Length: 116
Image (tube, rainbow, N blue to C red; front, side, top):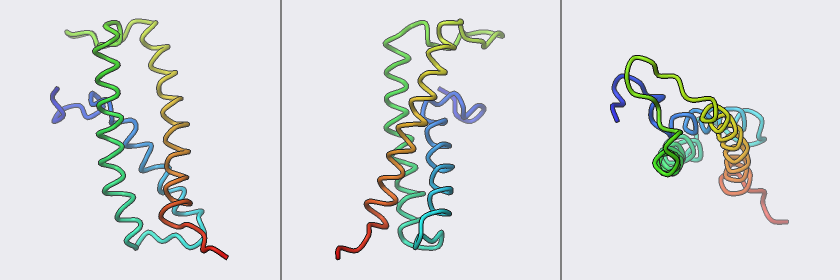
């Protein structure tokens, strides 16, 4: 796997981009959240690394377990139609999982409401 030329070849790339995008939106809309804080450092550095590793390992495992999902070698890099359908479903599932995971981290752990 050569990440120098095409970062989208890394299975955790989409999840990492989603994590950062959802995090920016959550930090923008969550009361009390600030981009210049230790919570933002934890979320955007440690969280991004963790999501990239976890979803990258999961993506590599799925690619190795299901041979039709491997990208074709050679000049033509298009995937087979079943792989495109599976890829779309996986991307939608990643969006849902990452959104709820990020929301729970931001609102439940990093900026949890004070007990009354």
